[in-house]
Image 1 (cartoon, rainbow, N blue to C red):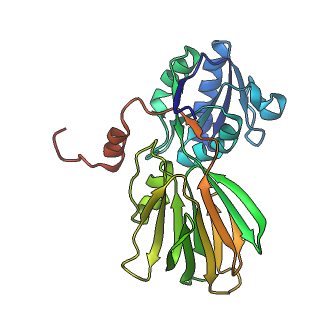
Image 2 (tube, helix red, strand yellow):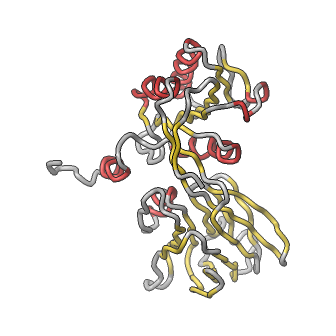
Length: 294
């Protein structure tokens, strides 16, 4: 599996914008610039069309050289569902405040697009995760996550019983509000908020982090990327007691005895990285050096 690569000068770009006024301004500017450089531009059909941009249906995804996500990390994750499957690199332009995954900020949009046009962008492989739900031995649902998958109680707050195996060995039965399994890329998302570790991008591992565990001895665990994680929903047996959510977008209601299986996906996401080290990004986003001389 290739870990990085250089993106040739782009001739066809799919722009996936966040649906709000701020994104539309940046979208219009991006379309105008790319058209002026002779680049074909497409936007998803569910987003209002802009002059010079064709709907995705009018252009096969296989012809796209680059997907540009205009928004925050959530927008990039939604765009990545298309990109990773098709093997298309993703460039994120952050229109929000935080944005760990995006390589450029709003005021750097033209710089980013110019780099794409002139073949100056690179991509790095980011591990994804395959998540399956099995009921009675049969496959109920299958999803691919870039960030994470988590099991959590439904509308009525209840402690869940989640029996967890790693690589065929029983690790723990968590009694908690829920359980998060995250990729290194997702370690700065829900995992971080729940007290899980920050994992450097490019690391091949998965992190298991309990959400508000009943026992203080239950701590986050980092396992090898080639491990199979099996989580059995062992209770309580209430209606709508637990749900599995993948990348904050797709949810599956779990019933007693359902098994969630998480493994490394076969194809990584090709993500355009920031121009500085990930540790510099973390220090800036999280304010680690605030009030100190760098």
